[in-house]
Length: 436
Image (cartoon, rainbow, N blue to C red; front, side, top):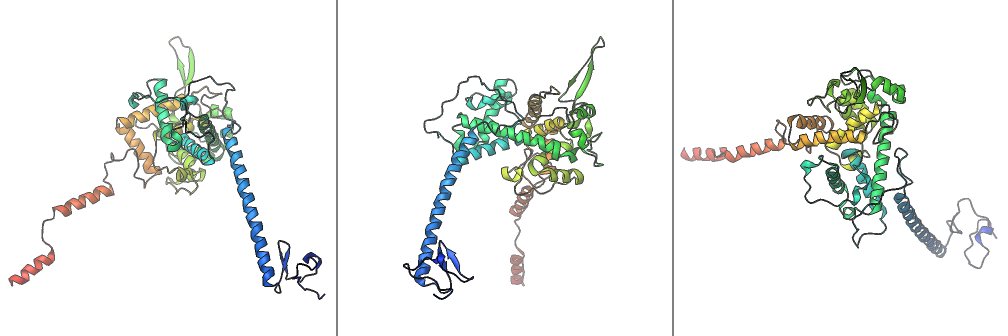
């Protein structure tokens, strides 16, 4: 048998026993070369296609198994943030019965949709839920948004509506199902943990010296941001620590949510409505959360916003304007970042500050100001949106700015056009010629 001969008969010895040229190739055990017959090529092609189909079937089965595992994992508590303590036993509560046609097992896309809504909620609506079991709360048809902060019950009613509003429509109708609460709460915990890490470890530049008017009176260092004791010694007054003395000379101290210089423009020591929430540091923190630390540092050093990246929170969630929850959250986060607390919890372990309650106080101020169209509040939202979203037209203060918009300019031009009753130049020219 000549060297390099390709076996073309099924009755001959197998190809593996034959020496082949270096230019030969093998497909599913069939040796191919320039001398391979058409019949042999067809056989090789069919064999290859069969193997490919089997591989596709295997991949589909593996994907199905992965989806099952993902479902079970998302519904478990194993992904709960280490930054949040959860009691092992929960009190019993009444739940709204799910409709008969609700799904027993959520799909991966359903879980992802709820997680996405929870991340957006944490960024724009609230750092914490008023209480974790709001998902089983029935809507009160007589609820009045103007009384939202009058009682805990009303706070829950207000927040339930916000959660429902941000959830996808097909999930909203089954809001009382346990898996939705678990995924939503776990994702909020994770988002807060990521935010805390980002502020203390990746956004240190925001608190350092930049020779800008918004610099901290005593700029922070990396060592400061990583030491509870150093943060307490250096920044406690900046975040609202005040010392009080009674008529008998006894002293006490506490943290004030309102008399906190860090939330004010120019670090005013007493609450001033025209300066509150206007410290550029708060805006930079918001940019860090929705665009990333690099964008925030650039804005802090240049005063100009940078374009968001395609995978930023801003792009993912379609964020185009500032919200009351975002400003309130950044005020809390600015104070927390400089506080002695090591973890971002509803109530600080080291300071005892009720951060969740402070958030609600800020939110009440901002939402009340917007509802009543107070000039200080409208000016605040315009300032934030002009600094962070200069090209957006979705500001909550839209329509209150004294400057005319491009739409106003167009309407004015159309009105002038409509009022023009004169003849065209061509008509006038023709008339003159005819008269001559």
